[in-house]
Image (tube, rainbow over all chains, first blue to last red; front, side, top):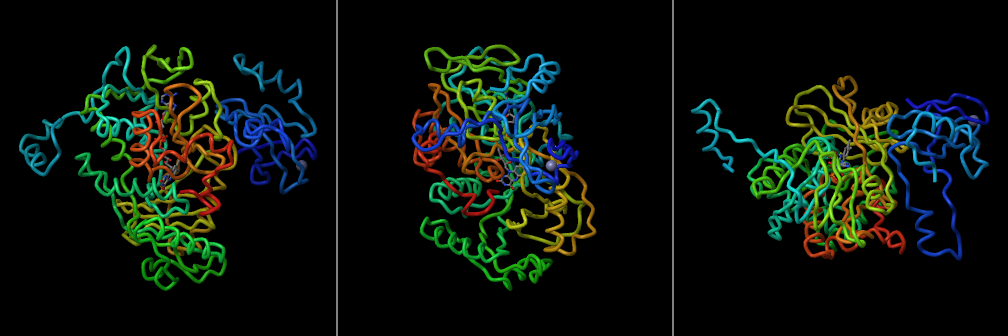
Length: 107
Length: 416
Ligand SMILES: Cc1cc2nc3c(=O)[nH]c(=O)nc-3n(C[C@H](O)[C@H](O)[C@H](O)COP(=O)(O)OP(=O)(O)OC[C@H]3O[C@@H](n4cnc5c(N)ncnc54)[C@H](O)[C@@H]3O)c2cc1C
Ligand SMILES: [Zn+2]
C-alpha cells in the first residue's frame, strides 16, 4: 500500500485517495514543434526501473496536483513536492543520491 | 527428441517412467549466434520457433534472466480471442488463434488449448453499440463466428450469471465460440522443447546487461555470463522493454505497470465459457482443476515489483460478485502480479529500431498471451527478412510520431 504525503494539505494519503498522473517534468511542445518533439512529449517515456519522478493528484482530498519521487523497483518514496516547479527540489535530489549512489540523475 | 504419444506413455509405464528425456537442453552459451532473442517468454520463444520452422534459421539463442515462461507468460489468465476492431489487430490475433488451434499437434506438446467460447459482456449502452460495431467489422475482416447475442442467450450459456443488475445489468454480449483458454506454462514449455530440438540454445539464468553496436549495427549483447555476439537481435522482454531499449540507445512509448490476477479454491464445474466484463474490469473462467481464474484492470502507477495494490483486487471482486452472486463466499487461494508493457495507443510494437539489425517486439500489455504464435510468426518474418511483412507492418514504433495509432483501447475499453 502506497502512502504519499500531500505537500499542500500535509495529509499522509493512502493510494485510494490519490490518482496517478504519469511521468513528471515533461518538456511540453505545442503548435509549431516538430513531429519528433511532439512524439517525445506525448509518448516517449523514461519508464525507469528505479527512481521515478511522477505526478499525483490528491483526488479525494484537496484536489490539487503534486509531484513525487519514488522508486519503481522497491516502491520506496523519497519525497513529495508542489507541482509549481520545473525541477525536483535540491533536498530530494540529495536524499536520493545518498541512498542510490549510482543513480544517473533525473534528466 | 523422442516424440510424446500414447505409445510413449505405455512404454514408459512398463519401465517405471525412467526413459523420459529432459524437454530442453541447458547449454553453455556459444561465442556468437546468427540471431539472439532476449527474453524467453511466449513471444520470444515463438519468434525463435518460427525463425527455425519458417526460415531455417536455427543458429539461435534465447537468453532469459530468470526461468523460461517466468514472466507474464506464466502469470496470465490465458484468455484467447481474435475479435478485435481494427483491421491489423484482427489480422494478427486471428493468425494467432488459427495457429493455436493446431499448436499441440504442431509442437507435439499438449498446450491444452480449449476453445470453450468467450463472452464479452455489454453492461452499458455504449458497449452495446461498440460490440455490434465489432461484429460488423469482424464480418468484413473475415474473422469467423463472432456474433452479438442477447441477455437471454447469455443466461443460457452462463446460468450462474445475474443479468438483471441493477448496478451492472447484462444487456447482451459479444460472443466468439472459437475463443477460450490454453495452458500458459505448456505454451512456453512446448515452444522451448521444439526450439531446443531444432538445435537452438535456451540460456536461462542469464541477464542481458548491455547491447554492443558498431557503426550503427548491433554486434552482440553483454550478459551476466559475458559477451555473446550476434548478427541480429530481437528484444522481446515485455515489462523490461524500456530498459533494453535504453541499452540499445532509444526510447519507447511504453510504461510498465502491475497487472494482478487471482485464483479461488477449486470448486465443482460451474462455468464452461470465459466471461469478460470490461466495464467493471473483471473477467473469469474456470480451470480444469476447478479454480476460478480471475483478473482485473492494471494498477495506475509505474511499478516493477510484480505485486500490486490490494484495492484493485477488491474492486474487481466487488463487481464480479454482483454479476456472479454464487462466488460471494468462495475463498481466494493465491494472488500475483505481472509487469505489463503499456504503449501509448494500447497496441503492440513489432518493429525495426533506430539501431541496425536490432528488432523489438513489445507493448502486448494486458493482452498478449492470445497473440503468442501470431506475434512470433510476424517477428520471425521481420528478423529473417529485415523488413516487416503484412502482419507486422502497421505495428511499427514510428506510428506514434505520425499519429497513426491502432486504437484498440477506445474500441474495447480494455485490451485483454
Ligand atoms: C495478471 C496478468 C493477466 C493477463 N491475462 C491475459 C489474458 O487473459 N489473455 C492474454 O492474451 N494476455 C494476458 N496477459 C498478458 C500476457 O501475459 C502478456 O502480454 C504476454 O505473456 C507477454 O509475453 P512476452 O513473451 O512478451 O513477455 P514475458 O512472458 O514477460 O517474457 C519476457 C521475458 O523477458 C525476460 N527478461 C526481461 N529482461 C531481461 C534481460 N535484461 N535479460 C534477459 N531476459 C530478460 C523476463 O524475465 C521474461 O521472462 C496478462 C498479463 C498479466 C500480468
Ligand atoms: Zn492535499
